[in-house]
Length: 406
Figure (cartoon, rainbow, N blue to C red):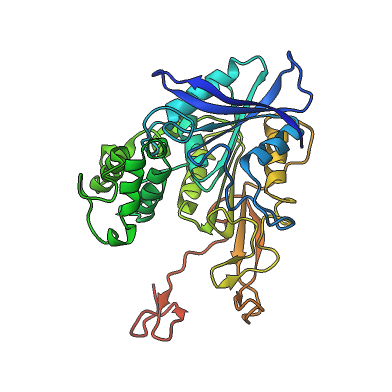
């Protein structure tokens, strides 16, 4: 699909740092036309490809420019920006903590453009959801609707960066991988060679400290990772803007929003917490989706060695595909088009079970499952039940020793 593109527009933040931004406009766009705008902010390269952005019908992942052009064909201007200190953007990268102000400043810039009609939606997966929730805490003018997929910290200490306080090792591997991809590393062969010389496997299980880590050559990455790791109690550090939305729920933007995640995702608790915290106090509407997927793998039917059947993918069950679901959401809730509500119930969740229990041709357990629409979370008919793992590997209501759980 054709579109007009403004490449690497420099958008100035409040501290003077300029962020690289691409603007995609519909084919045939003419000066003086004003359209609704969709914004994605990413640390993963605005011209890159996410491995999960495929469909059941086409297993080849679509690049971000391709997705942008899909949305321009649907009548939107699509803006995608490299986060501070990433790829084409200036500044030093500090994971999570600059995104609220940078996001709000970017919305203010979009609002000032002659091609924006005043309505801005945000979307993105994982870090692309974190940045949305961060800017929503500032309730910036122009924000009209959001679609947060697998992210948007309710509390990074409790779920996401740490889990109940325990530091997530994925933060270490992420820091090493993206320090290698940082603009500073691309520009400095010595720095890049020093980072490559360190084997991350040798460092897992060791406690890192300043000057004694595989990130010594990338001090900005070493600094933020040690700050997260060293703050091992629920200190004021974890109550900061960008990683603690629950502290900003009262002033959080009151716009239509979707919080989507999955049972095998590190951000399922975040999505649930945000829904529970925001739905009762916002007009929204506020929606919750919980699928049976791993992180970003919304178009597959399996997770690991278990297959949940043809009902499991987003495609064909929640919508034709992920692009269609988001387009329909913004068509109705950002543009106000008279189209069917794509998510009629407040909660859409996948309940596992009911399969044959046999092995599929691929060797996976056929566990099965189906989607349910609910009015609330937890569902109103839920009965909390304590189960215990017994010596045969089964779950039982009986405690070890034979006593029935209270």
